[in-house]
Length: 274
Image 1: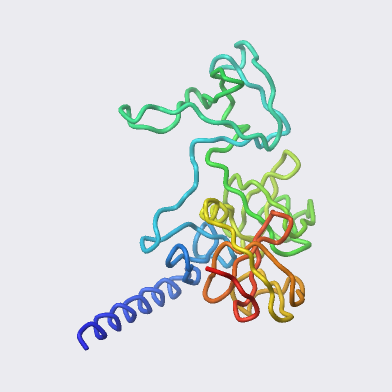
Image 2 (image 1 turned 90 degrees about the horizontal axis):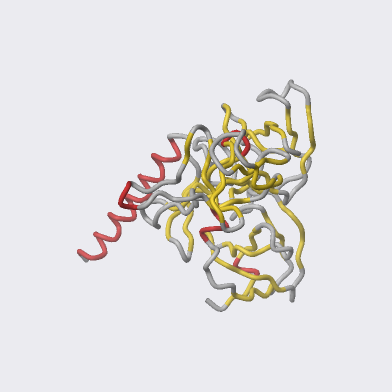
């Protein structure tokens, strides 16, 4: 009986904690079969969306790698020294990722930077890239709805500079109020944080998890989140198979078939060997 009461008390504390988090405007707390409790929220916190902010104290630490830079301009030069009048070693393009030169743990760790430049590994040598043309710890979002508006300013009344497609990914280079600042065609644009999306910390969280075969046992739907309240992506028929990586609140997390993005299938309509 005492053991039952301890379990019940722990469960009540968890419910209270989750209720407080939701009352504070944070995202929904969900349970991962593999990783414990995680928070489903936007990266900035307190905004609607499907970005995974990383694992909580109940499930571990966040998993973003901060020892890389991603090029966010159309192109950027790599210099031999942290200045633009030194020898030019080469050129990198938008979207390229470079490993940073790291400070030794004995000296406090982190990455080497100087005068507005990051030291990076370039073709086996140390080079320097202007920090205005690269972003540390690449943070990406993958859109889970179509026709997402991209604006020239953080205001829906500003000029619309693009209409973005579902399952496309973009590098986030900053935040402004309720908007992500994204890298779009080598420039900057603003998209609302409220659009359906997830951030790719979620992919990193599952990058080493085993893939299991899921077989659909009854006609059902793919959704962008773990619940009937999330938008429907498509119908699937009995007999179809997917790669399953986790189960979130009773919903199987599967790859979408193209290897770029995750979707959800109700576990009652599927069979997986865990």
